[in-house]
Length: 463
Image (cartoon, rainbow, N blue to C red; front, side, top):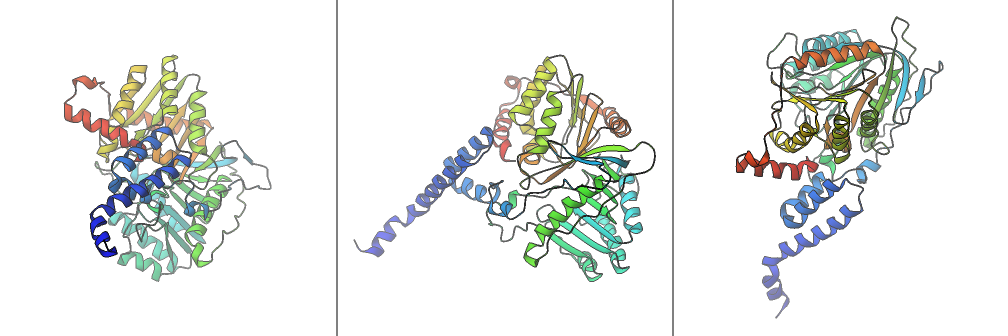
């Protein structure tokens, strides 16, 4: 048999051989990675049994901390000293004293505060957002940024390339023409860049004159904010911070911006010192980042530690709930030991697959004595952890595997009674529009729903 005949004979099987060969290589790589057992098993099953699907999915979405792209981003260091000694490093992040906060409990508060700060900025505006929607709110914010850029204010806008995919529209070009700069965090085109689509910047930051910062869970769009009340608007939480904590938040933006602009030769800018807030009730804030640019998983580890150390109560508010085994077990142990454990989630989120995937976790928690409340007045997108009325956390991270272990995220922990009280009040207001979770036995469910839940839980580590 000549060579051409041999190629013709094996050609129908070549794709299969290559697929399984590549699957074997990827499985070997997967076993070297420090992943959670559930994530490893899920990827193994998909890659080995469905290589035409599993192999490309892993190449696009499977990368985490060992990706070449993550190594190009220097480890993030936000432990910046200042002259007054109000900043100190902790085991997980950086603690600063002498801050002032202003809560934004509604989308109207958030929109008016954002526009006010944009208009008041005299030197610089730096914004990082996962989603900048192509709607009236997005266009309005960009128009305000364009006006400040025309007035000589330095405007830098950092968009996640997946969350704000395809945003090169005329009104964005208007900002660039006015002198503003727009960069994409880790562009995914060509889309097959290995692991690139998996590594998303989910942090939300808006910094004004490097003196005031807005953080939280809100993106920029009509679902999150607007000038008037809307019954369809998602419930969320954000806040403005003044004081030394701004230094750490500025360092986060500068590191992300320098990474996005690395091919243009830009380097991370130095951070200016920010004095303590001189008014009454100064706040103590611990700023924490998590993601491929950190050592370990500090945000997850901090949340886990305060839950395990809770003496009286734990409250978690999150739009998506897919915990790992340790976090799930910690909540169950706390409830069984007599502590008050409460979980508040939307009755229906904007991601039906995650709603299916969470049901087994919810049944386990409910059986252990955790109070599960379903928000039934639309979509709830806020992220809060409250422990013993002594610690409150909010930020960009959901309590799911992607936020806690894959995304670039940001969290702020509060230790002062002012912030703890305000966040508690926000949660209490949400609780007025909830209903209890009803535990339905798996054996009593329709067969198709049971199968859908089983499949969703299997792929939950990949979501």
